[in-house]
Length: 377
Image 1 (spheres, rainbow, N blue to C red):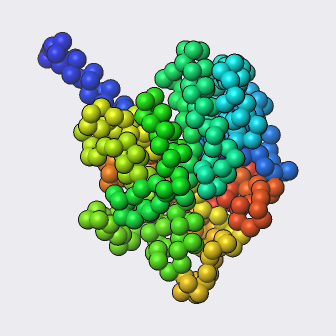
Image 2: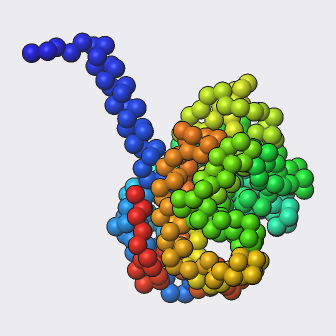
Image 3: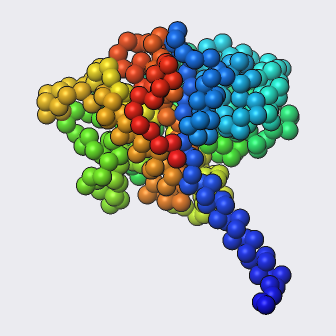
C-alpha cells in the first residue's frame, strides 16, 4: 500500500484549492438586474424564488428596497445594490453621519443574511449625461467607504460606482481608448479612489446600441457575440464587440492612472500594474438586447443595408445566451480574468421611459415565463 508524504498532502491541497478557485471563476459569472418599474410584476419573494429555480446566482438592484432585501435573507444569492442617483446620493454625500445611517439601515441590518457584495454609489453619472449629480459622487463614495470600513465590512463589501461606455472619447482600437476630455476631469479622481481601495468599476456595456448607432459599420454577428471573422484592432484580434468595449475601458483607466502593461494579475481583484497600482476590474454592470420595440433612436434600416430592426426575440436570445458563455473567459487584454456581468433585465417593465425599446429588455414576462430559452450556466 502506497504512503502519502506531508509534502504530497500539501501539494494536493494547493492543487485542489486552485481547481476550486478556477471552477468558481469560470461558472456563474452572470447575474441579472431586477427592476420594479412595472405595474404587473411578481412580488419580491416570488422573484427570489425565480432566481433560485433558474440558478441565477447574482442579483443587482438600483435601490435598497427592503421587501426585496427581506426576501433575499438566506437565499445565498449575491447582491449588488445601488445608492440611487435621486435623493440618496446627495444625502450620503452631505455628511459622514448620513452615510453611516444609510449603511446601518440598508446594509448592516441585512448582512450577512443577505450576501451583499457591492454598493454602487450612483449609476451612469457623467458631465455629459446628468451633470446635476456629478459633484456628489466622489464625496458619497468616500463617506460610504468609511462607513463600510467602520462597520467591519471591508473588504467583503466593495464600494464603487457605475458608468456607461459613452464616457469614452474613442474606443477603437481598444488599446488607444481614452475618456472624453469633458469627462476625464470628473472621472480621474474617482478611478484613483477605486484604485486606492481595490474596488472594481461597474460599466454598462451594450453592443446593441453600438450597432444601431453606427449603421453599416458593425457586423451584426460581431455585436451578437456569434462566430464571425472578427476584427484586428491595433494588431489585436477581437471576435466580439463586448470584449473590445471592456478592453477599451481598461485602456482608458490605465491612461488616467499613468500605467501600461500588465506586471501581474489576480482574477479575483483585478490587475496590478508596474509600481503596484491597481487598475479597477471592469464589471459588466448592465448588458442586454431588446426583444422588441424597434431599432432605437439612431437606427437606420437604409444604413444597415435594409435589414429589419435588430430588436427581436431571436437576437435577444442569441446575445444573452452567448454573453453567459463569453464572460467566463477573459478579454485579449485580461485573458485570465472572467467578467462578472449583469443582464438587463429580469422582466419587461411597462412603466420604463422613454417609450420604445426600454420596455423590452426582460428575460421573463411579468407572469414569470421565460420569453425565450436561456441557459444561465
